[in-house]
Image (tube, rainbow over all chains, first blue to last red):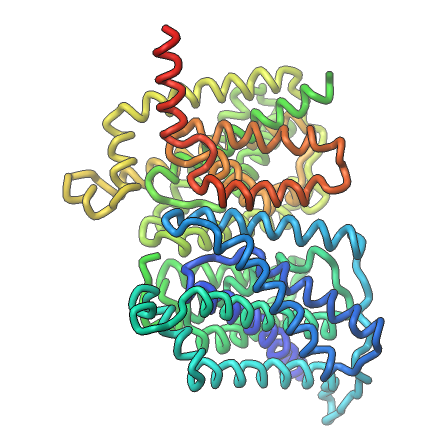
Length: 292
Length: 280
């Protein structure tokens, strides 16, 4: 019964990992870039959500889109000022400038919000549902529901809309997409916006789930997001969705199945990552291995 | 003065670490795990001197050898992958090393390992190592091995066609890089007298890459300059204490826009050589 209980927690945790990983994978798809500041965008989203709720008292279904818009704009700014001006021939230079963005965002957050944990307000009234010995809080259902909904919307956005098609074309080849009349620069910008908006949503959801947010939370989720991105295969959005759920479940069950005082959760995640890298670097659902 | 001395010692250790990242980088291997090797070197040498009373130099060397062995073991699977995959593999390795040290009670667990004998002449040893490494890298550029490294970094397939043994060369570069990182860790441990797993997190591995890329990755003078500049600049920025780190981040972004190849490129070296020749 405890196992089943934990599985639900795992799905909830995994869904937020998925949102982060999708952002990574989208950006990696169109630019071949490891966006180092992505975790910090998530952190910024969590704090923005916190302050929107504290100042205006707006309900979650308005706060969440507002936060997504705000972090989306943050993503646009990052792309426009820190990544676009760098010459294309140097593939390590944008990595370094996103590290610069990470440092700036983290220290601004410490300055503004303090270097300690801040309590996230109860955005929704928590109800506890009981099924026999099984208790499910409405929090975790809501988080899982919102995450899945966002992923479905994103999936249709990429699969069906004109911009989504253009994004996939740019991911295949900048040159060819440009020849076919796609405005590559604009699509890259939009991709950053979308990815950052998802990270912002993940930030709010993490805030609801863990009740405490700190300026240092970005790194943890960034690392988990990277593992999930690999699990799903680089540039594979659907893979990232499923990969997140797998990692969430794996982590939680590692806590249940291997009872010890040792914190194995992180070793587990990175152990999975190393095994995948060695034996199946194209990811569990990977279709192609890029040479990047 | 004391303070400046300790910053200089840290700068020396940072140079060692930046060079330890640079060696595998020549062969196209980007490692985020140098902090992990540093941790192995630091812990191994600290255990040698705290628990077994081994003197400074052999203890640090032993730490380097341990890190080198770990580098050899990690280097073998690393041969199969490259680019961002290798970056993630080494990052995962670094994190796992850290978590393992947190869970070993023998070396103090999360609380850390204290009472490491203080080495008074750390600055001397650190810069001595830097000088040795500089000579090593200088000689390497002209040597058969060094040329093989560069050929692999430029184009692996072409290098293989020419007859370079890629596996041996890459593995050598990776293990020796890990060895250098271990030495850096040992020196750090005997300078701070105390080490804890938190000191070797992912962000530190990132820091060494930042040194190297900021300074320039076309020639080994780049990482040396990058480590020196980026260790001292934040100290000078203490005047404006409050916005120090924000400025540091901004500096990284602006530098990458203005000079994506890093400060010390081949053009700078050429320019310096020309100037020096003209003076002569």
